[in-house]
Structures are given as C-alpha cells and as structure tokens.
Length: 245
Image (cartoon, rainbow, N blue to C red; front, side, top):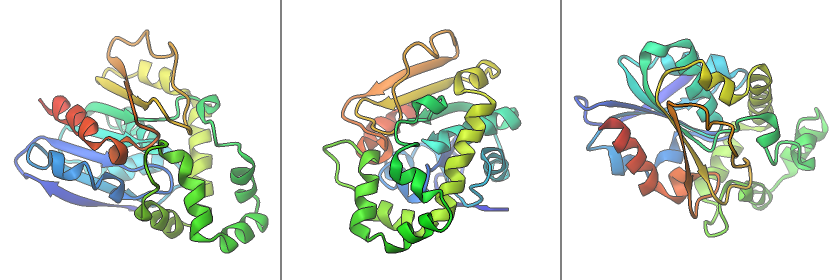
C-alpha cells in the first residue's frame, strides 16, 4: 500500500481524514491540526502512488475504520471524492478545498513550464537545474498575494520529484475527463462542502456548476488563494469542526 498517515487528536473523538494536494505532503495541514485536535481523531495521509486518483482513494480508504469526515485539498479533493464513490460507507461528509472541477478550471495546468516538465529529457533537465528559488517561484500561484511561499512546500515539491508531479497532474486530467466533479457529486448523497479561495490562481471559481446539488454547498474564502489550510487555517478548522458537530 502506498499511503501512510500521521495520527493526532483524541482516539475517542469523531474521525477526520486530511488529504494533501499535488506535489505536497501531510505537512500542508500543520496549521490546522492544533486547531481541531481536541475535537477529532485525525489521520493526515501521505499519498505516494500518483498514477491514479482511484488508486490513491483505495489507499486512503484502507486507513479508515469508521465513518469519517474526509477533507481534501486540491488534487486531494478529487481523491476524497473518489473515496466516497468507491467506499461510500466510510464517508460521513466531504469537504473539498479548491478542487479542480473540470479540465478547463485548471488555470495553470497547460502553462508553458508545466507542459515542458512533462516532456521526457527536457523535463528532467529543467527539474535538475531548477534552483530552490525557481521552484519557490513556481509555487507562487498556489498562494494568495499576502502569503509567502513556505519553505516546507518547496521541500515537499522537491522530495516528490518531477515524475511524481507529472503523473499526479495526468491523473487529475484522466479523472476529470472520465467525469467532471459536478457529475460525480450528482451520483453521491454524502453532504459536501466545496470551498474555494477568492484569490486562487490555480483553479477558477465555479459559477453555477453545483447549484443544482441539494446536498452540496459552495463557500468562497476571502483572502485565500489555492492553499486555505495554510493561508486561512482557522476558517478551515471551523468548517471541519462544524461538520463533526
């Protein structure tokens, strides 16, 4: 199995699973964990397979032992959705933070640098010669203008490596090509909170794509970019504790 988990909180409390985004790790939740550990038993997973949203969902589901509030950031939001699709008895509520909801919603996915990284040889050379400063600059679009790019996100990206990043990106396209997020949520009955940052430069805010879903609610976070668990941790923690209640 290609998933591990950091466990925190109270063992007897309601269960929460936190799933990181593209090129990241469980450390994306470091600012949220202390805000919810008194209210939840928390598993912050570390996914490694990258090849398939569905495979990552199965790996994450293998760590769940009772109905759980599943929270996913960016690509992790799609993994969380796939957990509910494939293992519905394990999910009591979904909280999807800044998920791509269609291929067209992915504002940076077809940028020149991301396309070049996907080319064998050229991509390897670009990655090998990229300094930490250049990789930090590449992560700039994952945060709002008021938030500096944290060192740990640069370190996580470098640790994942180019091939992991490319495969993870392709798995997003594959998943959304097979069915956009709104269609997938139509097939589910689990209560769902869709959360988007008003300053997100990586995923476009939806318009009315989810308005017809009675069990889904869309929330916009002012001041947040593409990484609310780091930028607005208290607001994310409040959403999680409300779901637990």
